[in-house]
Length: 76
Image (cartoon, rainbow, N blue to C red; front, top):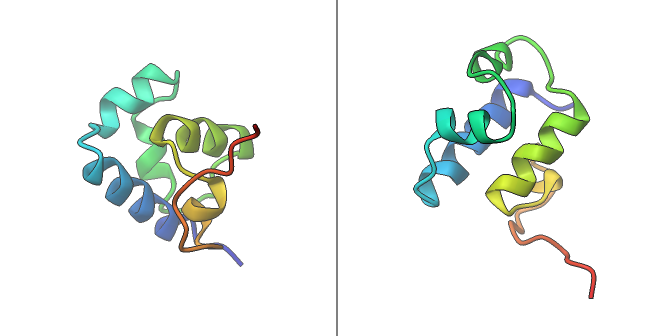
């Protein structure tokens, strides 16, 4: 099972490594800042997780901890 708190931690780590401010990212993709604090107790919706992954240019699988490969498989 996936731990939403771990997902929040990974999101913060990826954002920091890319010099992205979480608050700005969430605003840019139309999500509220409280979403990160909500992840301590509940899993984010799949479409919201996909928006975050797209913004951070990483895969949803990476955010979920299913892979150690951060790169996205892009269609040619």
